[in-house]
Length: 161
Image 1: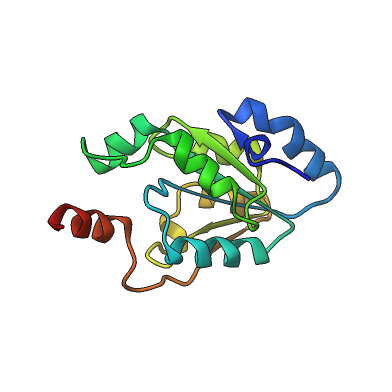
Image 2: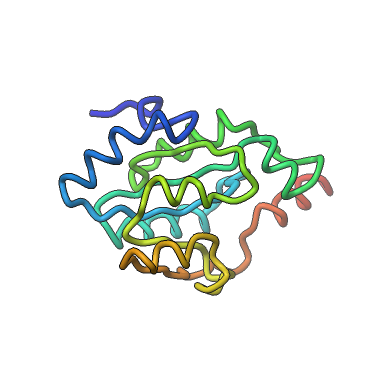
């Protein structure tokens, strides 16, 4: 049985050997990415749905510096170590890879997923890497969005308390 720590990669180079092995085994790899700052039920349901689409779910997690660039100086609330290890503890997640860039395009090109997914607040054509995945015969999906749950809303509620 894999430990949580063994499912977390500090960069793509740590994950590539296993990803290549999964490709050789003919596994259907699903990829998604995000900040996952305050994990909530919307994230959990989304990741379960993503995993149900294939054999393997790889999650790209924005590094602390890229979260700050995207979300502002007060974010992330939890550091990348916490965020990546909490995600890795979920049964639906097979691998977590921390990435430093503003977008996961380099990660997507290295992984070559069969299916690329994001939450329902993203249209498939807006999803970074969709052109690349589609050009390799893959699928791009926008999954169900669970209304009423967002890290930003949780952050605001905590700050008001």
